[in-house]
Image 1: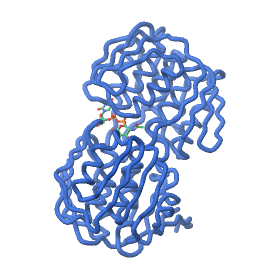
Image 2: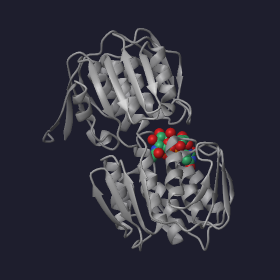
Image 3: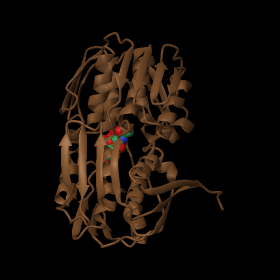
Image 4: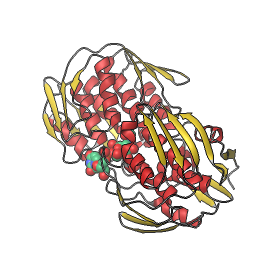
Length: 421
Ligand code: UD1
């Protein structure tokens, strides 16, 4: 079992180039299936979720070659349409392969993704959309079989602006006859990145980033080269670490427009922030101030994925901050671990009331999920004394070089591998 050993209380200072976005690279790897040829993707972070996507592509018959942060996929030899349960379980977001596999092969066999640490993760909207496009969907016994003669473009109104459903529909619609219009589409920057990839491959698709995405299907796709955008959640995590530990950091490569709600919170908390189109500098005070209530919301609202690290930083603020979580029902599990470090947090359903304490104290804590684990690292960097953070398999799903980056910023953090007792 590996763990981070962190000696807290060291101010952070320096500059970091933010890694590529996990939530961008996963759907784009699925999209490589549609081109039926070679896709070269740059700035792919080294993450276990990316490894899982590569394993799925290889299982489907694609040839995949990884060289550092570049991944080349040749989907011409693809000859299967099933994703085994073992690979589906490695990564919940493997459901984004559904639209791509169905579109390319006319059939897809996956297992139901089920729930995850954040609570139930239904895919009813994905399935209803694919059904309306002409797919037969049979979802019994935990497996999911989809088949269609030919997908037909449709007008689809999403009742929730689901990121995964929007991506799945975009992928399937590229292979459908006619035009698909997605209303109440999710507007996340990662969806815009997927559109950029698809357009560069020759797809006729427009509107990503707004609530209406229009796809005219059956355009011949071709070879494509694409660079993944920077990860705004990793950027939010690094800013949170600086806010918790104090100091001055610069993040490069990240689009400031994607970061506005998080920057607004840290401005309210007393940080001095300067931004350029692709660069952010933040100078943090000795102690943060409590902020106005934070309510998570779909983009462009405050991202649910940034809530845990920001909450951890504000656990050491002067004053009380309230978080309302509207996206996932089980997203405060890091709060229980933060209590072990001396935090004063009360959670009632979807609301967490965080009464800032002057100092957190180092402790042994366990990551409950990906961003909850990142929150514990943030807290440990700001805490007095040593902490041990276990459950790194969660953190490794989304952060490619956390300990290297924090070490460069002056933190004392190292990974140890311990024998399980
Ligand atoms: C994506 C992100 C995840 C982020 C989330 C919300 C990826 C790989 N993951 O997850 O990091 O936290 O967006 O920004 O990009 N819902 C339904 N039925 C559906 C689909 C969704 O009820 O068919 C609900 C979900 O339970 C959730 C809400 O809609 O409450 C938003 O989920 P969704 O946007 O689909 O999240 P993901 O795509 O799974």
